Amino acid sequence: MSKGRMPGMGNMGNMMKQVQKMQQEMARLQAELEEKTVESSAGGGAVTVVATGKKELKEIKIKPQAVDADDIEMLEDLIIAAVNEALRKAEEMVSGEMAKITGGLNIPGF
Image 1: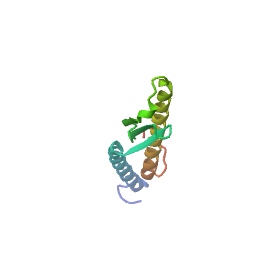
Image 2: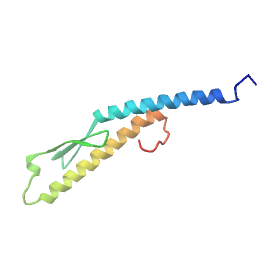
Image 3: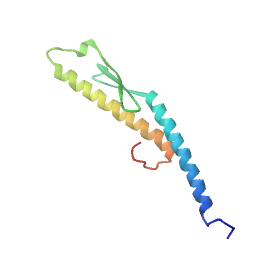
C-alpha cells in the first residue's frame, strides 16, 4: 500500500470530477432549455402552441376560423389538446438531452 493513500481513493477522486462535470453540463443544459422550443397544433393547425424546454408556454396562435361564438367548448378543447401535446414534446426533449449528459441515469428533478 502506498504511503498516505487508502485503496480506492483515486477512483473516488475521478468519480467526483465526473459528477462535477455532469453538474456543469446539467446547468448549461438548463440554460439552453429556456431558449429551446417545441411546437404543437390541434384541429388541423387551427390552434398552435409553442412551449420552452422549461415547460412554459411562449405562444398560442388561434386561426380565425377556429373561433365560433356558438361553440367555444370546441376551441377550449383544441387549446387544451395543443398545450398538452406541446408540454409532452417539451418533456421528451428534456429527457433526450438529459440522457446525453447522464448516460441514461434517472436523476429526479430533471
